[in-house]
Image (tube, rainbow, N blue to C red):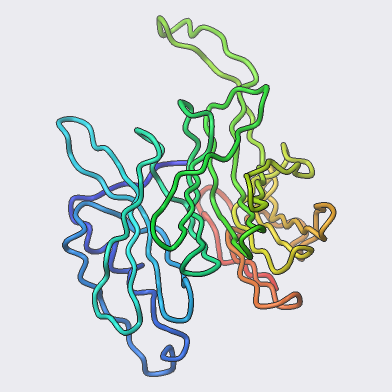
Amino acid sequence: MSGIRLRTRTAVAVLALAAVTVPAATAHAGARWSAADLTDVGHAALTGVTRVDGDTTWAYGVKARQEGKVQPRTPLLLARDDDERSWREIPMPAFADRANQISSIDAVSQEDAWAVGLYEESRGAFLTQHWDGTEWRVVDAPAPEGIRLAGAGLLDVSARTADDVWAVGWLIVVDSEVPNPNKPGGTIQETHAEAMLQHWDGEAWHLVPVPDATSLWTYSVTALADDDVWVSGYTMDDRPAMLHYDGSSWSRVPVPYDGVNGELTDLEARGPNDVWAAGRKLVDDEDPGHALLAH
């Protein structure tokens, strides 16, 4: 996983996503995109957008400031109500010195929302923050015990109710480490990747076992009910993958792409029988992929 590249000229990066805020009622044929003026934000990149309720839209990402040779990063959240023309910044506390990148935000309401992001080794926990309608508060999500991580992060969150929130992510687990003969003081690590699931029950985050975790990479989650949750991703041999939770256990669900190399990177669900998954089909090194869509 690579970090977000922050450019000196941020207008292009922020305008494209910031414009994805047309309310459903006005998003009709003939409507046009308009650019948002975010020049006051500074050096920043917006990576996602979410509809908080029928009137409010949030856009989120990361911003940075130059301090000598380093560029500290802090979370960035912008909000706009439908009856307003301008965006306003909602302050978010920094999680740690480095792991301040927000991967995803989802809201139950304007008084109940969650943000997730990277793993911070110094805290031994993942970045999650909770919004109570007034301010954001850092809430640690646990890392697996008994293993060493070379990297990890939460990629997506789905907040259904105050006590039913799901987050998915990834782990890079260190299997072994030996001295690097070509670099004094350096080491060579053997690692493997694993999928990760976490659940908020209203009191705390809990790690949830993933079926065949070492064979999966999970990207996206959407919760329709306490017994109907979907997760998409891919297998370690580059096959599109889907998981489903029925209220008691998780299971792999076949996808209609037998023999196809690819990944399902995003989910959108309108009901139990109306779930969409999007991603890409991988062809070869010279052809990095084509659109993939499942329903």
